[in-house]
Length: 235
Image: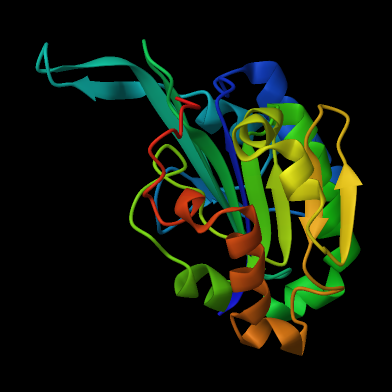
């Protein structure tokens, strides 16, 4: 088990400039990929140029039931650093309808401990870069514990150690309702979103139980997290 960082966005990610800035941010925060590819096992030696190239490769897009064919394009990239103990995955879609794109990182616990500050700063920078809709940083145990089948299109994944709610989510959840919960800390983001924290650290012993996450879900509204919200109209 380790620490997961996830960002969901509706912004199109199949952009050379955006891909370049993504890899620049990794370098800025001292995170150095060693291998790249589209799928495991990763065999391509890392370079920023190769990362951008793989990121922008296009495959068939979203399957349309009515036309019985794929429309648009899809792509992404996998990356790994064995030395620093982390992996990353970017998946993007460019379809005629709204589709969630995502950026995902997994850090071994020793990597999280070594790069805790850098990981949090990277999270904030990626939110701005991608105009993030939703995201979190969490121990995998809490992610698995709160799992409900579906995507951000059907429900919010949960309440974790570090949570990011973008402007569209704050409108649905009511911004004042989210911000008035007794978070350990909360930080406003330049795009109008907010980042909240349940405790001071992702490995805090308080997060081994579901008490804090349940309390936050109940305060915000449990139906937003269990897939039963009738007016979840972001999409």
